[in-house]
Image: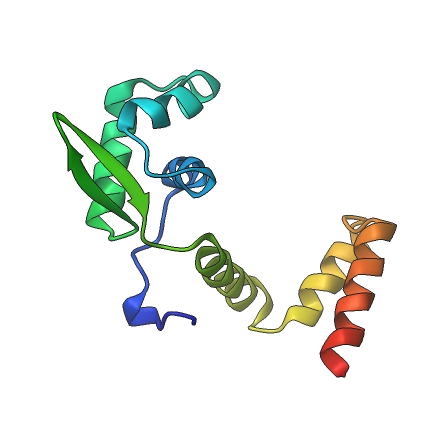
Length: 129
């Protein structure tokens, strides 16, 4: 079930999205476990991760649960719902709400591989049934 705009959490920043990807992969996790997954790659510290987690809790994208002296974090926002909302925003903002110009742009700029085109064709055939 898709969420209405008023039910969606606030927009998630690129940094917050990196944290969400870790939690979508496996949860619940502690802040230290999230840091283990992203800190080295991004040059972040544990306090940075804790700040991002706090922001995501405030945006109602994740839930927190006490576990002794630490907290466990779990996504409240499904990855599929997030991708759906971001995709819709992209198409609305850049292509006037129409997907066809997006595909035309990708095709014109050689961003679509032969495999991509085959997958799109198969999807279109399935949608027309």
